[in-house]
Length: 251
Length: 346
Image 1 (cartoon, rainbow over the protein chains, first blue to last red):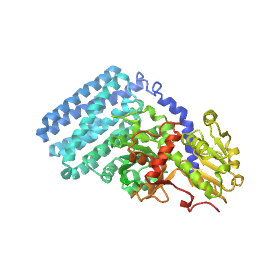
Image 2 (cartoon, rainbow over the protein chains, first blue to last red):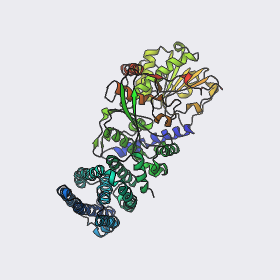
Image 3 (cartoon, chains in turn brown, red):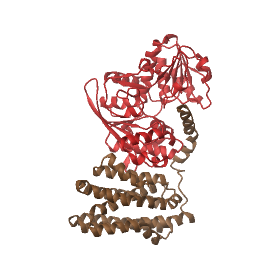
Image 4 (cartoon, rainbow over the protein chains, first blue to last red):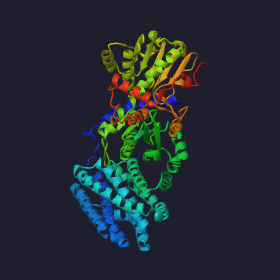
C-alpha cells in the first residue's frame, strides 16, 4: 500500500511542478480581473460586509465600554480605528466603481449582531468580548489576510494597514479574557457554542462571492482557525479545551 | 529550543492520532476539515545529551497528510503555517521532517517569506539532510561487512543521486569509503553529468542496469511508477538502504539474502520520554527518530543556530563530518541491521 502511495505522490509532485512555478511567479500570480461585471457584482457584497463589519466593530467597542467604564479611553481609541478602517474600505469600493450593498451586509451580520445586543443588555461582558474581540476580529483578520494576496493594488495597501491594527484588537479582548479566565471560562465556552457556528455559516454564505475575488474558502477557514486558535491559546486554554471549542465549527 | 515539524503517514493514521491526543474537532473531521486545520504544537520535551547538557524542544504536527499532495496550495500552506508557528514559539532551530522539506523544496517555498505578520527567518530551519546523509553513509559502512559484503570490492548504486541527500551520499562514498564502484541513477541526466564531473568519478547508469550489479543499493528517491523488480536478478547478499520517505522498501524487496535497512534513522543513548515517535511508528519510539529531527537537536546542543542544511547540493564533506562528530558526542548512533528483527531472510 505504502509503495503505491509513495509512487503516485511523487508523480503528483512532479506533474505539479510546472503549475506551481507558474502560479507562484509573483508577476503572473493569478490575480482576478478587477474590471469585470462579475467581479464588481461580488465585490458589492464583500465590500459591504467589510464596511458594515467595521461599523459594527466601532459600535460594539463603544458598547463594551459601557460595561467596563475604566477602559473607556482605550476602547474609544479602538473604536476610532475601526471608523478609519471603514473609510479605507469605502474608498476601495469607490476606487473600483462599486456601490456597496449595505442592505445585504446588515442582514449578513444580523444574527451575530442580535446575539451581541442580548449579551450587552444582560451585561455579559465575556460573551460580548468573545463575539467582537475574538470571533469577528478573527473572521476579519482571516478575510483580510487572504484578500491581501489577491486584492487590487489600491485595496492591498489599505488592507495591509488595517491588518496591522486588527492584530491589536484581537490582543485587547485576549488580554481581558486571560486575566479573568478563572471566572469567565464557563460563559466563554457557552457563548462560543452558540456563536462559532454562526461564523461558520457566514463563511459558507460568503464563499461563492469570495471565490469570484479569488479568495479560496478553504484558505479563509484555515486562516480563521489559526487566528481563533492563537487567541484561545493566548488566553490560557489548553489543547483539549480549544479542540472542544473548535468542535462547534464543524456542525 | 529545538523544534521538529512532522506529520502523519496517512489520513487514517492522522485521525487516529488526533483522537488519542484529544483533538476531537479534527479527529472526527473529513479531509476538508483537515485542510483547514491549523498546525498543532503537540508536545514539549526535554532532552539530555550524553555530555550532560539539557535542551528543550517542541514537536509540531503540521496537520499535513500525504493525501494532500495533490492539492499543492493546501500542502504549501500546511508547511508554511507550521514554520510560522515554530518561529512564533521562539524556537531557534527546527527540522522539517517527512514530506515537509520535500514540499518546501519542490514547491519552491523560499519565495513565501511573509506569512501573515511574520517574516520567516530561514536561519531558524534546517532540512536535516546533512545528518541524514551522514547517517545513511554510516549505516552502509557498518552494516555491509556484517552481511559479508567487502566494501573495497563492493559496487554501490545510489538511486536518486542528484538529490540533496543523494549527491551528499555519493560525495562521501567516493571520497571516504574506498568502495569499488559507484553507480549513479537519477531521472534527470544533466545534473547527473554535473555531479559526475564534480566527483570525478562514478558511473551514470539506469535503474535496470544498476540493480543486478549492485551489492548495496541506497534509495533516496521514489521509485519510478512502473517499476517491477525481479529479486532473482539482485546480487546475493544485497543490502538495501531505504533512505526515502515513507520507509516502505521492505514491502517490495523480499527474498533470501536481501537485507533491507531503514535508512536515516538514529537511536539515542537514553529514553527520551516523548510520545511523538510512537506515532511515527519507530521500532523503539523512546530512542529512535529520523536523523533530520536529530539534526535539530544536535544543532541546539551545539548552540549552532543556523540553517545548517538548506537548499540543494550544499552538503559538503566538512559539514557531514561536523554533524557526524557532534551526533556521536551527544549520544546518537545510526540504527543497524541487528536492531531490526524484521530482516528478511525468508
